[in-house]
Length: 407
Image (tube, rainbow, N blue to C red):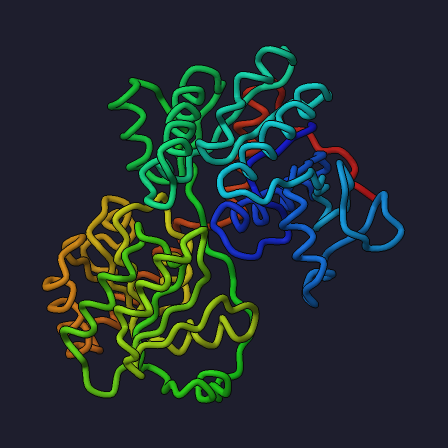
């Protein structure tokens, strides 16, 4: 089976739920002998070639060295072919141009499945239906992206058009949470297939906590926000709640980069008012990220929009007590006894809930232990990859088959 993947910035994953999602699923499918091509943005790939960890699990195919990648250059990451396409360094335009090029190339080649990830790239889901009668079109909705505050009016309209194109042209729509399936059912009377996400596994980390100590942190005595610093995740609400509560001997740590939201990031810095107990650590990778996550006393996700948050699943997997806004997807994950919910957008309730959690560490750890068991039982990448492969095979009308692995 030949599978084209459109909508990911590229692999290996750096930051972003879609990239991690694709990294986990497609190398498992490729390992069964299927040919998977992920169309990537050259801006993302060029950055990765300049970082030390990039070369792990990477095999150059058409290139004898590692130059800046040009049009349709390729390499392999864990037996998944990564095809780099040109980028346009303009906000919103980069993803649109890359998706259009990828959809055009994929439509002209003999792919069995053309899989779009996210509603924006799916604006081109009509193209394979027009050009390639053989390929089956799949779209995964990772979240209702047009609701995100970072997009301007034009981008918002384009993403809404992508949503409508998805409903009209996709042979199958995948959703990563039950709430997203309900959205498509209620708004479009369109059935979807729910296949969840799962957390990635962090690197090993030093239990002596050297990096955290170098940043002035003490294990178990800081609140952790992990994710992009964007308005819909409401890190500003968390800062306000922390400033309101001012818990003794606790710090608030933000780990994550920005996403076309520099002005918002500067607002957060001003809102923190130079409080030495509020730390912005930027993006972390590998052992440092693992150390900071595992050392957290509480993980907090105050978002007003989420598809299925991998950072939350990762915290649950690691046994970190969790507080989250009461979104439907958070209620799905945390239930009534795997974490604590507070009213979305309500600073006072967030501060009250945070205070209760700090005062009740034993109860919070019991919830965290149940959360870890839940993730192990319900969110497994091997099972998820098998479910996607079964869906692909159903769409092209074949029973399960395995070819020789890619050499």
